[in-house]
Image (cartoon, rainbow, N blue to C red; front, side):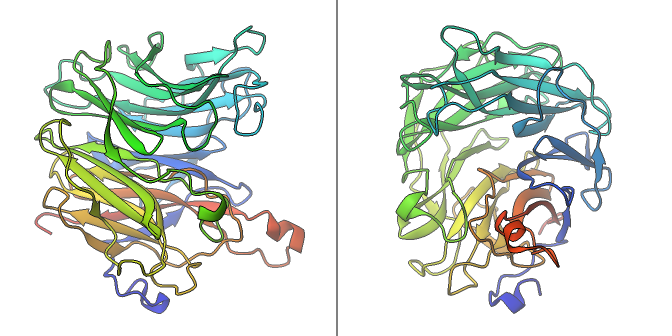
Length: 440
């Protein structure tokens, strides 16, 4: 049984299969993954620095793709990916020359921009032209810093906006942070001028109090639902006209601080965030997931809404280890199966190590609308880092009981490497596949 030697008794995820996809000579992290709704065997996974791996066999094997550079820009980061309803794959990425001041990105910001590239063959080849969402050349009098873009598509079969692409991100300004949004109605060739969708502005520093962690999904009828962290709340807004306009954003769930730095840090990891995710099922029921340390150690939580976001349930604890046991569960990602409505959450899990250092990946599943979760082991080995940078997020996608997750692990020390090389904490991006099948 997976995990038995690690001291945990979780059953393995059905059909569990894990494979590494990033090159051995890269410290890759911050991955994203998407499945083609027209062919669940086609999977694309991306990671930073901007790289792409694609699979045509349900994530059993992957091949690295050659990704043309965005002309005039270096390798990109903060990557995300999606498929549209025609089976086209898209990669959204952030590019810049230099950062501003530490965590105060708009102060002394240099040239930066957000771009989208497209693949018409499931991620194997990528077009040279890139669509620009927003970019600064570095000499503007009021230059801002664009950050953490996420792209998603309207794949709802009965939506009047089916095929639209949407993207949202943070804009750090000198005196505030806001959320911007853009849409494409021509299969990603061009995007609309960005609009601000955050009614309340956050603090201007990339820390607790800023607006962070934008994510969006499309529900029945093409309704766009998006969330982000605003202080110690999750904020929600929606659009019913294909992203032309949005309702005033409002806080829906109280959470703990989303940044786990300083005294709240997790041993062996450079930094950890509990940014939220949002999902929707075919009934229009909404789900949000996040992690925080309200219980002392970090746990994963989920709240749900059956009235399209007007009211929300009390938080449900997703990880099922004993309460207050000192084991951290962190860097969660949630996805809802558009076919079955099952809710899935993956997260790093340390319940099997009394020292709270060795880390595995757990996949949780709910078939009762997020009221209860079964936990499954999704790892083939535990990993342990020494202040390793795992990035700021993992990612998860699902279609008709077939679940695909992507995450970063600390790579095993290289034989013969000197101490200086080992301190650089190499990382590797891994993809997990599971198949819950019909009726499981």
